[in-house]
Image (cartoon, rainbow, N blue to C red; front, side, top):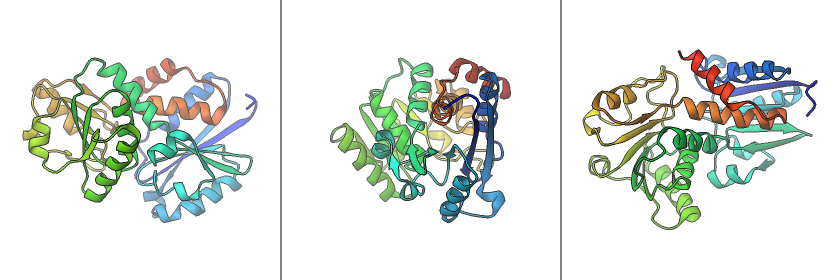
Length: 284
């Protein structure tokens, strides 16, 4: 795509007013000399839910949007409305980036790559024999793929909807081999034997305060990773750090999924370090 073109992108999700994504994209667009506009399409503010997705997609196409990012609770609901899926999105079963081009809607998943990059940077040599993941939604599916790709041997997935956890575990085992993922049953004993804990639920967000696991289940030799980034220090991370746990906040995933989405929307490779520095300056 030529640099003279205007990029018009947006984020569809619920309760996204605090999102750093628009500023990340627009700031990098400015640095690249582009006209880059990024809008929030907040279902809560519009008093809509994911059933509005067909209308919102159609409206975006009519208004010549270049693409859309998709977040909670729409990462799986969006799939039937798309024309094509990238191999990653198909394998993961969740979409967080939709490119609108030549009358086609193509779904991608940059969450997986985003989490993997953050994990490699922040928890490079962490033990990964057994890991507990809270949440089996769209973000959870991407993170689970990233964890198993990064060498986690056994992933136990807990979700309020046990069928969803079971379904994700089955999908993962088809990709990574039998027994690599299981739907968790007994959280206290599973966490007691785990090397690490990852939260992929929205619990801990400014609008959904609290902890995805009881604080008494945390212990010093457990590493703890988070995908929530507003606030950057969730209650889970604050309690984990107080115990002396190694931790990974949600910032890296937020930045590196945006790095790839920027490239998909604009056709230009952004400066990842500049985007990371800008994100850190916003959360300073």
